Image (cartoon, rainbow, N blue to C red; front, side, top):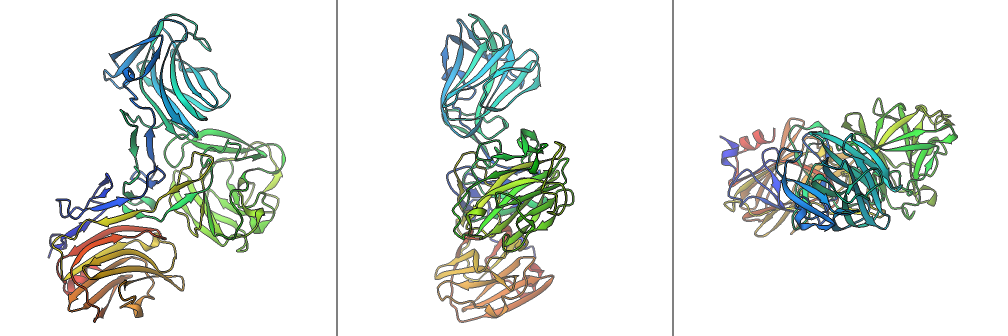
Length: 594
């Protein structure tokens, strides 16, 4: 038999797609078997994409980003239809008729932001980017040789990228609230006094973050790209060639400025910081380099008093990459005061060389290899002390605590950092939540429902693949509900003696029909439930290549009409779901679960 042909519903993230709040089943093709999806109203979720890089949601906050006829002007005129950097006719000639000529657009932006625009010299060779706000933003660019002129002190970073044919992409990164973005036709460095002259411009963008990303064109509403608010997350973590559907509970990153380590919220101690010094795990030039100085003592940055010390379990994590320093250290203390509160990591070998004690680190989480030399490291702790409500990230000269964390530096040891995160009420880390503000950012839980089960089977079989190796050891958590006309059967994950286990559970009768068999160590995650009719269920499980089955009777259920994935308080990676409008034979069930 062909199992795919016989299935009435087939959901495989490796063959489907997700967009516009839906995860599409590849069978049926009329949409009746698709899944509706919701997570929240912001772009706080991320995933690991097919290239192995972290993928975020992105938004161009400037309206009419390349229709400058919708912008306001100050003693300037705009002519469309000019040859652009991309070979199109979408560029604009910006020409001034008096001093201080510019085109501008009102906007509401705050936090870490980057303004960018493509520009080319014409009769004038200089341009100024200017942001009007609580602290005005400005940078001058020389469009004849790709160099910078004057810039405001509040600029975090600036760039001018040669894209060919005389065109440059000019950008400015800053931390300020702004209400207005302006592009000036300038006459020289720090000079806008000329009464005539022109340049070409194309594709303006204002976005959150430390770097300009690929162009997102906007119209009457903001332009969005990447991983959107309610888009299903097909995740390729761990170098997977086929994705799984990532489902996670709601989490909050309470680290304000999770990427901008130069902020005053991250005081430095014996180190210097360089913004946008290396390519981060998201593939952008937005990672920081941290370098020791020549002082004697600790060499670190510390975010202090992040939360109230109330005994709540929290999880710390950060991405690190080796530079000239092989070892880095993290802790929830303000100083690395002893071996017991020091978590030292070997960035070359990808192992912890000092893990402190369980008094300070309840769980030290397995390092995650992000590729290109990057590691995600971290720990969980419920320590209840105001001395440990911090996040310190620093340099270690060696693998042990003794004489390696407090030392006399010479300015030669450095490594790279990105994406700091502290999650409250959490005993394990979830996917990265970007935070470009001084407060906290919350990612809503993933919630996914099947629209309907085609053919509404009264006798049925349901197969699901869950990668339990990616699921933390949490106890008694639902990952799937099979919904019938007479009730709900939940599929629950258990932590029994630190072993993975899974079993169905009838919500209506509060019973586990297969409870005598839930103590098998689950690693592969393929399970199948068959309803034989007359209240008889058979539960098939594969365990390291061995199929087990158990039959339960007396619990009357009828037509299966919907399934619902759950991410209330655990992390799941779903790689396949098949529903059959029949009770499969024992032989077929064994084949499917082997």
